[in-house]
Length: 498
Image (cartoon, rainbow, N blue to C red):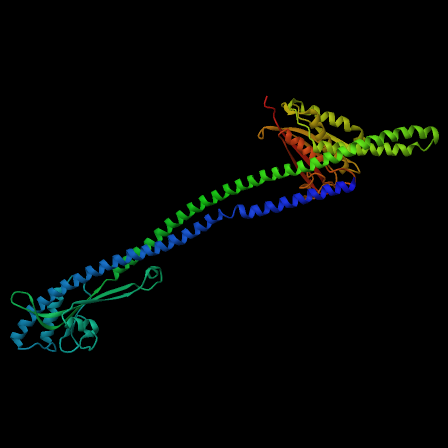
């Protein structure tokens, strides 16, 4: 019998191990597909960031191109007007008066300077420079330090001598230069146009007399464009951050919902597997118990007859037969527990008095309480709503728990039993607390498993049967325990619908 019970225990543990491994695998694989959405949220963040940078670059480049086109058109118009003014107001009068143009003459230079400054007064020009047509030398400039310099015109000067106006842009600085402590943003546009002879009709001839360079300081306009780029990046980043937070919130909420559903699915599968495992165990236990019960009854009857005959033949030895009778009674009790576990009764629930059932159990255990020197502390709620009960089955559930409590208090102690209303949970609680040796955390999770026991004697089915009875009453049972301090069992039953 002991070997058979050990075999059943190993079978149960093996089934639990397989179920635990399967549950762990499902936990790892069941949630993995939805985590791709988290990956999508971070990917979208990177995509939005790249799109923001690209958008700011496109907008700022477009604005800069428009600014340069407008500035270059403005420079060309200014250069054409300056060409007309210089030729008519300086070149012609100077040639008539002096016979030639020699800017080394102070009067000629002063006259040219006055005309140029008058023509460019109030306009967006930083500097006006005139190059000689024969030699790459600066003949005139509104910046005196540049006059007389050679070979500074570069490719733009040569292209203008060929009759092609062109511009050269000088840039320095970016968005980061607008931050406190950054370098100043600079942008200068230098436009080179041929200085032509003007005919009597006002149209420019093909004869090129030099090159006019007009330099414009566009730093403020360029700084505004750079600032616009920075604002686009900042605003887009803020919008991107808000969208990311919204997406992240949706993903997190969806993740929690999926995880809850997955956990619920695993819990239901766990219950289903547990029920299937118990069904297989029940079938096996019922078969074994049935095979044992019949010969056990024969052994008991034979021992009782033998006890009577020994009393006549060999008085004083009848206790040997009594030992056989007592042990067969104990085995019969074990077999009945097996049968109750294998073929549990269906609870017939009717509105009943919970306090009355608790009182019946306590009256039955009163002799054992006195024998074990256990103090009883009872606190029953005065008014308890009717609870749907199967009095016989619930009586047995309470009896199993209290017997375990007494067994945990080998040297005496206190057994506390109370009932209380739980209006928020819509039910009533029965609390059974002992001051015994208590249980470690890992043991609490196993006490309701069939065939699990930490005692030398017992089937390990008492609490498994108790849990089944509580579940048939649509209730729950909770356990808290601390080693050396005792254990507490809390049964919560719903109020009767009636």
